[in-house]
Length: 330
Ligand SMILES: NC(=O)c1ccc[n+]([C@@H]2O[C@H](COP(=O)([O-])OP(=O)(O)OC[C@H]3O[C@@H](n4cnc5c(N)ncnc54)[C@H](OP(=O)(O)O)[C@@H]3O)[C@@H](O)[C@H]2O)c1
Image 1 (cartoon, rainbow, N blue to C red):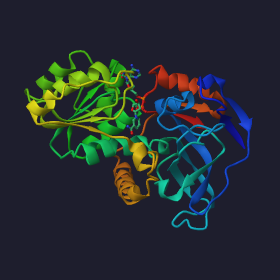
Image 2: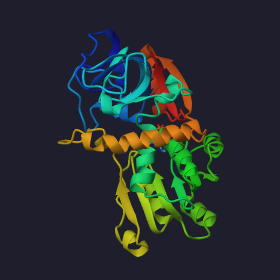
Image 3: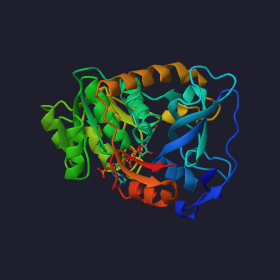
Image 4: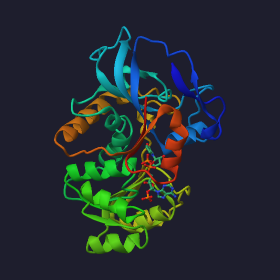
């Protein structure tokens, strides 16, 4: 099969498309003919060797796949050859055939296309886990979503809205802010004077839940824009700066900062294969499918590239030119 192969950690432009053996079937595995695979900031870190988890080389990168099942292992239930599915995988997505664990493979709703489905293994679940599991978001609360036009940001806007929250979105350009409004944000602002804008919008209270994939100064301003009893969920550092917040802010406002690493639930943390979270993930995916079928989630794929143009796809993500997801069509 054709696959993008990383022989040594380094620049993604050093990778090449090669013919390699397809992955083998195993009892709890599903083989998928890949139709679309997601390109993300996180994958660029894996290829560079800067991600917490380092695949054995050589490997094909890519953790989000959608396609058609070609074969299932002996212990797999509820998924059969011919099913349209999406899956979160450890690596191996930039390839014509991908192998996924059964617990991380989900049959797609009929109305979903393969490119849209690449947002459902990781982007939507990350935003859901951050807002609902960690942020304990309740209907009627106000949520601040930073980086609101990105893959996880736009997902967070839609999920928060679907759960009955008021949403304040931040993004770096007027076009991106308009996209956030189109997907349900009640207010969309730039990063400058973020604290004052959120305070003005909430009559001085601040946001009950903050979703932050950016870090740096945006995180620090968001800390000042969080309400008493608020929950600030830190999920990433797209700015390149890991913030160091003074903990007295938490004490003064009876607020929490809580981390969310969705990979832990997929078994990407040392000493934990993720099996314990399978039931919770299944329930979450069912809730996400319900929201999709009700028209509350409208996944955005801003750019599509053929497999061989993987480097241009990665450039597009890293240059902040994308909104929602960038995919490789296989
Ligand atoms: N914790 C987890 O489980 C988890 C899961 C998935 C992703 N993540 C992390 O979440 C972050 C966002 O992921 P994503 O897939 O949504 O990425 P993305 O689609 O590229 O979105 C990132 C957004 O960050 C904003 N941004 C602000 N400052 C930036 C900077 N200096 N450089 C680049 N972007 C900047 C950009 O929007 P503007 O141009 O509007 O500012 C962009 O839309 C990444 O750090 C990723 O590693 C974490």
